[in-house]
Image 1 (cartoon, one colour):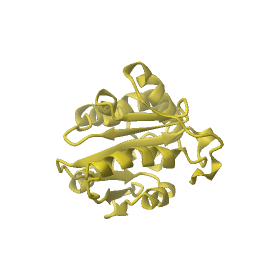
Image 2: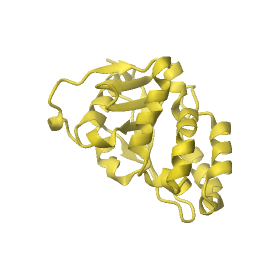
Image 3: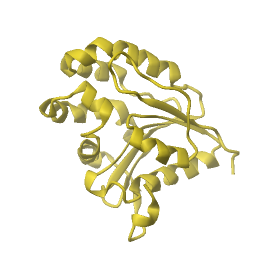
Length: 204
């Protein structure tokens, strides 16, 4: 994904509460073929029924903290959890328990334990919980624009950043923005997820 596909200068704005539902509709359009999400919810009917609530529990608190961003009228969105802000693990866990495939349920405990073991809880680490671009616009550079926008501010603060890449196709994008793979998360028959850290830069 590069910026060369962008015809006009992209516009980035902070997601407000009135845009919460639209944000997760766009995320749904971008995650519908995500390996981890479809391992959990292989039925399209189930995925479409639960994804909004699952994604809101995973990254929705970014909106409350002014750390959710959209590009070009919802071509894409990114949800960052600031230091000290966590996903709602209780709601996520209940959605998985009630709706995940039996095969995924066999391996999900080990998968989540590995996620927790890699996830940093430093008081200066920002967590990119979700970033997604509408399938129609994927490959046009919007993901890179969203990454640059927030990472510039993170660098000014001298903070670290962390994410988990649930799709191998996105790893090169994250690497171009300074993220380094620090292992692999995989349990039983689950797809592999790649935890990635971006070291802190000197405050500007």
